[in-house]
Length: 306
Image (cartoon, rainbow, N blue to C red; front, side, top):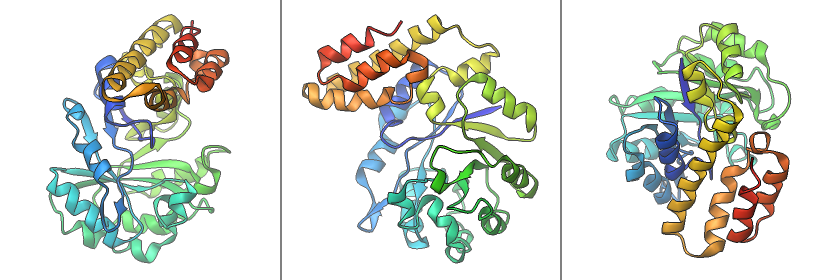
């Protein structure tokens, strides 16, 4: 079973991916946080993250977000020039800052532009594509029209989060629609959504044996050992998970301490890595880490994790 590590903006950057791979070494496939256009060209900081030497040794796929074919063409041309042979098209981001501009899940409403995707992809025959998508913007059946476009293409997989953009990351999953997609898609389908434990993976695989994989984002940020535990076929006990997790975060801290200057820069970079870990490390330590205003308080907060 393929386990895909979905990107989270501001979290799963090159350093996070590198040290996650080093500490929890496995055959995971990682994705960059979405790469987008800025003033008519691919953002330089996004390209630096994708081409970073920290990516050496792991399987990494760049993800692009776009509002029209002009932006998609710019992104694909730039990534091809940078050596990319695979790309993930983001039609799933639910954040209003992107959907309001017609990107991410907002693109699902632009079927006229969507029908042009095969024409743009045809310009890059060496580029293999996958798609990440939601069910729609505010209607869980909006995927149906876009599926006609996706079915006209040969994709490695379609990663489906069975919510609409307006739900963000809360509310019920529309599993009836996910099941409909499994039946309609001519491409392999990957499940994405509320995967927090190895048992969650096993449940999806057991219920939907035809899925081509499972994707996790917030789940693996909160429990970094998630994929390797599933791969080993046995959940780790909490002391082992915490020991490995603390080692992982020490690696991140050492890295950013070596390249950033001063407590303020360092702590603002490393605190977000704990954002989804409340269930794993306990509310008391989690709150203390969130409140830590300097490195001394940060170290004291982390020391509370037992």
